[in-house]
Figure (tube, rainbow, N blue to C red):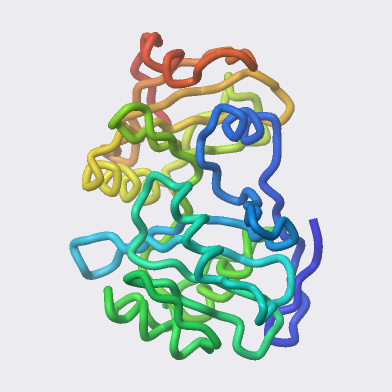
Length: 275
């Protein structure tokens, strides 16, 4: 973890997404948000990749692939070729790709419709988002307090300039012709006692709607860093009278086991949460 400067302000530590389960997913060929990708033609060129989805007044979701480059911008590098290579390795089609080089005066580039536009500032980037849904632009009326850590530069930037619903995609895999999405929760308590929170209900509903629109499968998974191999699977999350209902099972996953096969073999039971 490390500190970041944003608009001349020192912010909290950045979260590095690496633990036993995300490492397991990566080794099993899942796309995992927050991982670092390298350019085959130039191993010194690498970026942290995330995929973020947005929803406000428009019916359709906006999906953006975000690359936060770790090294300073180098004018000798073919970033259009770099981004095309990165996109070719994901089984999801974003509306556009946003490239970021933090701590530079014009830190953004946008790859859209096969063309890279570089040397962009914040107003130019917001214009691209506005094309898809103008109601995403502007300051939110309420901002949740920033956690002790944040996920990436875009997380901080978006808090200042955008509103509406937005969240990261945690992990996914294409199996045959079927895309499988994972929503991950990492509680501090044991997954044997943990239950989902009502405060996260909008996240569950929005992601379920996105997966329905994309015609892909969705599995919610909770795991603890302290309980290696132990997972809580919970699906079909809904709410009634301020009580969450879902179907769930707790399972041990071994390093050599196939997660999707394991999930399909489970017998889920109904559980409720009023947290």
